[in-house]
Length: 71
Image 1 (tube, rainbow, N blue to C red):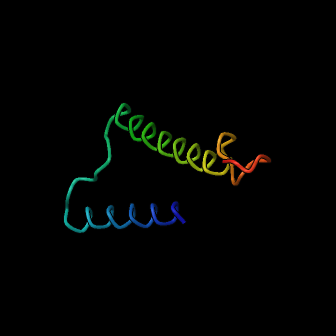
Image 2 (image 1 turned 135 degrees about the horizontal axis):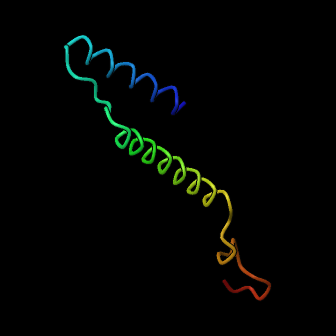
């Protein structure tokens, strides 16, 4: 869903820039393109790490009282 929404927003921004004769908001040099790729990869990596972290339960946290009846 995120990918489809991102593509739709990108297409809308591109269409608006073309319609109003604005310069495209895209880098015209290789370093700018690499910067955009780096930001995207960083976002995806952190999103993946946060999802993975929330999926694994923390071993330090108990769900209820232990065998002695204490928390």
